[in-house]
Image (cartoon, rainbow, N blue to C red; front, side, top):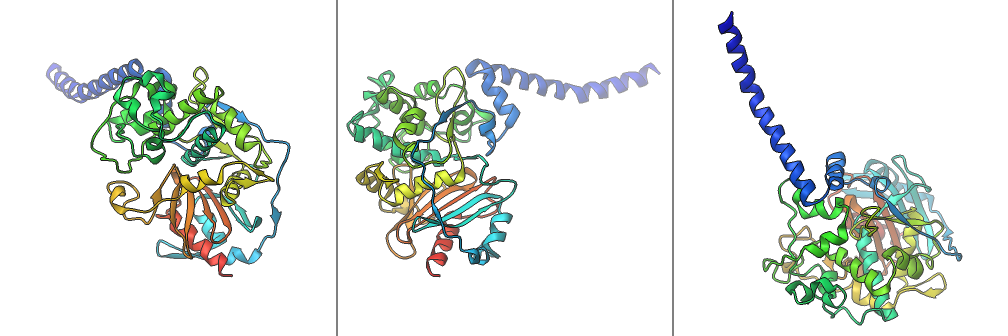
Length: 404
């Protein structure tokens, strides 16, 4: 009997030993993480794993108030557009079914400054809050143009050390504002580090993004001036914005843009934490869908909207359009696509002539602006809905509508 129990114990020990070792290793890893970063960061990572369009509920936020001069689009709904044929991924659906079946939460088409199609789906309605993800970066680009126009900074050619004194005398300080806007700096960015130590995770969940950006001074020569998506860039631009203007990024956005576009609702900007109060520059603007479309209308009209020149038309021309050189997008998610990237805006050749302009975020939150077709399309969604190239699909929808 003793020998039999001894054998069982050996088996039990053999099973439990690797489990205990694994748990101990995980505990040590968690302690290291809290020491390197913070308990709050670890809690966010373990509690939520991946980012979600509902994350605005878990971050603190700063309210961005609407202005007094509200703008309401004229509505000229074309009911027949619900039956418009949409082709994607070897599938074909009506526009209405396409919206429902692709995890889309809002889909709004404005043409000639009139709402011609508006649909909400998958549990959302016109009063629902949507989040921008990386569409926020295009707003950051607008804000940089505005601080130059206001004279707070001189030009995009300035080194960032002019505004980030912590970088004075350091190689990273020679990085220009333009290099940040273009996503073409030598600042290192590694998405594939072990577990939650990758820069994508850190720049989304960390509760002191300002401090994170100021400590991250590592440079690399592996990009060779080519496009490389890097979330430290908008964080550094946020530091430059708040230091040059003397107010928070949200306050500057409210004062110079949101209060002027005729928003019908307040918006908000998610913050990294209550103590630091720094905007999630890479992702966190939260809004009612119809109001975000107005940013697109402003860009469509060269910065003039709601009776006012809000953003310089020259800045919009410089910041949204360039030439597409496929070589500089090799090894990036834009490889093989006929899409370019300028100052935190994407652009793609229009089906007619010129270029269409795109603000684009995770899970394919997309603001699609087609000057040739005098059209703005907003798509927000919970996921990409199984659509491999939303830019291409929206271009096709834009072309189909313009041909009616």
